[in-house]
Structures are given as C-alpha cells and as structure tokens.
Length: 192
Image 1 (cartoon, helix red, strand yellow):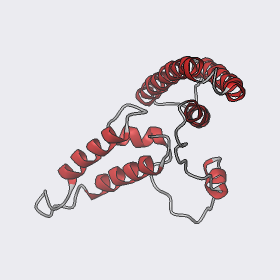
Image 2 (image 1 turned 90 degrees about the vertical axis):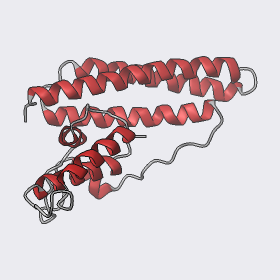
Image 3 (image 1 turned 180 degrees about the vertical axis):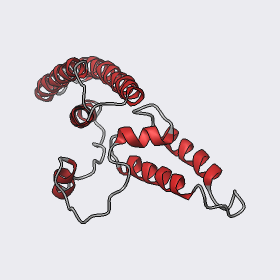
C-alpha cells in the first residue's frame, strides 16, 4: 500500500531524527568506552567496540534504504529493524557505562507473526495498525517522545470526552481512535 504524502513526510522526518540521534549516541558511547574501558576491561572493550561498529554500519544501511521506501509495509519493516538496532545499542551502552540493561518487552511469537501478516482472523480489528498511524491520529511527528504522546492524548481526550461536552456522545468514535492510538504507542516499547 503506497504512502499518503503527509504520512510519508512525517515518517521520513521521524526516522531521520532517530537515525541521527542513534549515530551521535553510538559515537559518544564509543568515545566513552575508549576513555573509560580500554585499560581496565580490555576483553570487553574489543567486543563492545566491534558491536558499536556493527550498530553504526547497520544504521547506515537503514539510512540508505530509507531513501527508496515507497510502500507502507516496507516502512514498517524498516522501523522494526531500527528498533532492533536501538535495542542492540542500548545493550552495548549499558555494558560500557556499567549500568543494568533496560528491560525490553519479550517477543510474543503470536504477535510477531500477526504483525508479519498472519494472525487470528477472528480477532477484533482496530483502526490503528502501526505506530505511524497512531502518531498521525494524535497529531504528532513520527517518533515523538512518550511524554509528548501522553500530553497530546490528554489534550485531545479532554476536548472529546462526553462529560466535557455536556453528555454529547457524537465524538465518541474519534475518542476511541485516540485511546486506541495511545494504547498502541504505550504498549510499543520503541518509546523509551
């Protein structure tokens, strides 16, 4: 399915921002490792150095592939790859800085295959199928922080809630879409 031009521009700007941030954080983490890890933990340093170099290489490949994305499903796969690479970076960065690794959500194989196109045909179908759609519903740029997502959700929900509108329930479908978008992004571990 081809991109809507507005969604496409939001997706590209969000992905580019995440790529630039990840590149900068990778370089900074490598510099930190050289300064603080090389002498005391030589074996770990070489493994981390190789891992961070691989993260940098993979980010460059994603950046190149981003230029040729034309379809929404291709964009979703690319976003999932970037999330995986961000997780790998977090693992290496945690080791460099000697802090506990952040908890990631475990991969549920049913949800993995459902996202890949399979899934339960009897399951209720919502309107929000991706992070890109959820950001669009909330009126945010792709890749916005969870704080911005929560703020946008609360502002929009306050305007549409029947209690605020003297019991008028005409905006209830839009309110449900906003709630679904917020829940999708909240359950998505790509926001940290």
